[in-house]
Image 1 (cartoon, rainbow, N blue to C red):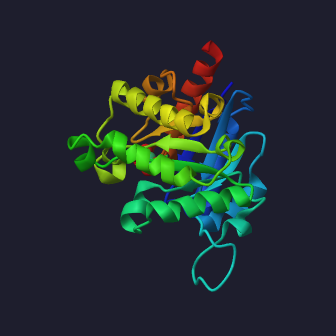
Image 2: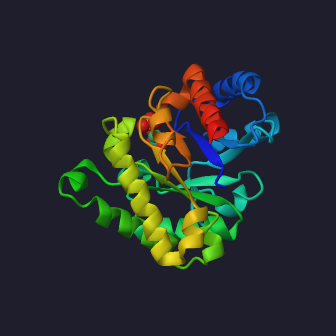
Image 3: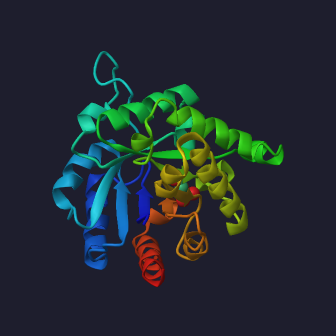
Length: 258
Ligand code: PGA
C-alpha cells in the first residue's frame, strides 16, 4: 500500500514567525492521519525552529534544496549531511531550480545520491516545459530526467524516492495552466513504466508518484483519484490555511474510501 503524501512547498515565502503561525493553525485542524503523510517544506532558515514546534506524528519536514557535497568550501550552501536527522525528505530538481539556477540532469542525479547517502528521501521533481510539450517531447524529457536522476541507485534505494510529476507550464510560477487529469494520468503511468523498466515491477509498484502544478482544494480530488497518483506537491495553495487544510481533508476522505 502506497501512503498518500500531501506536501507543501512554501518556496521563498513565509518568514519563520509566519510559518509558525500557519503550522499552529494546521495543528488544530489536522489530526493524526495514519493513512496520509503531510510534509512541510519551509525555507532552510525555518527548518530548525519548526522542527521543535511540530508534532512529528502529524507532520514531516522537507528541505527545498541542498548541495550534493557533504562539506567543504562551498560558500552559501547547506549539505544533506547537515540536514540529516532534521528532515525526512528533500525536494530535488524542482523546475525553479532547473530553470533559474541552471541545475543540470547530472547535478540533480548527484543531489539524489547525496540525499540517499544521508538517509533523506528525495522528492524528485520532473516535468516538461510548454515548448517540449508542444513539440511532443514529454516522454523523452521524462525518460531523460527519471533515468539520469536514479542512475547509480540500487532498487532498494529507488523505492525510497518519491517522484513528483510537475509539468512546468502548470506550475503557478510559470503560467499555472490547469492540467487535465487525463493528461496527468498518462504521464504518471509513463513514469511508473520507466521505473519498472529500470528497476522491475516490484519497485515500480512501491514507488510513490505525486502530481504538482497549481493544485488547489477544487482540483486536488481529480488528481488524487488517478490510479497512479499517490499525492500532491502543493505550492501557492499551501500558503493559504483554508486551501491547504481543505486539500488534506480531500486526501483523507479519499484514502478512506479506497
Ligand atoms: P504551485 O507550485 O502549486 O504554486 O503551482 C507547485 C510547485 O512548484 O511545486
